[in-house]
Length: 115
Length: 115
Image (cartoon, rainbow over all chains, first blue to last red):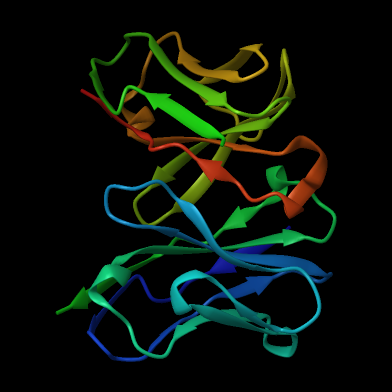
């Protein structure tokens, strides 16, 4: 079975700081990887995804994530955060060709940006 | 465009009372539908998913049940609530035929407190 670890439960940064949220997964086969975000008062939504190809994936709002297969990691990054990035971020993994019913989510990282 | 409606937004119910949470999707046909529970520090846990009318798969044994009486309607129920049923419940949909290529689209959630 697959699992996802997000070791940072709550991250607090000042505006313009650089961001990296960790995500490690456990699965022996080929995977699809996702980051979902939930802004305050809004629904959970897809931020970016990796299926194949370039391991550096660009998402919305300047976010990117890098898939490092040897480290089983899919860390989320942003060079300069804004106050509006305050949200909860969830990493998720799915085995290749599996449906969404097999998607495994991490426990989430709450990001607080201080103006 | 597609929209997902979930209600009520908040609910306080006594132990032993019944539960009915409703979710409807508009603007798409034959969606896959999902019920998740989000608990603090525990991420998103898939409770039920459905690939068609009357077709329900349960991921974890529990005090809850789900039904899909219409193509775009998904209902989460309980005959007798337990204190442990308290939590944040999310409904989601995805395109049926695209597997993980179709991201999950979440509703705004229902905060259930069992007293």
